Length: 103
Image 1 (spheres, rainbow, N blue to C red):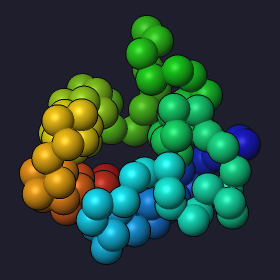
Image 2: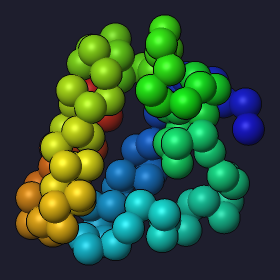
Image 3: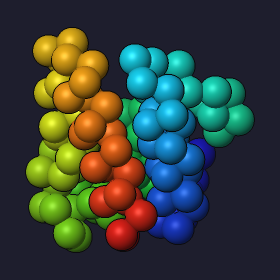
């Protein structure tokens, strides 16, 4: 799917609003994937950039403000998710959604 930066941000906000409203759910459970289809890295920004998130010369919109997605609250969410810490994961999702809305 070819996305504009604006559309990628709209989809990302929609995704993370759902994540905040559905603590304990996995990102891949978001019903929006049925609407928008599969995306690179399961991420609208990676799809917009049309690259794997770990490739050099990333054009992710988060890079402009946070240097990378993992330097934003997304990194905290990802770490909490790996550690199966639902409370920390939810707090990071709330923070990440706020960061997205500031972009």
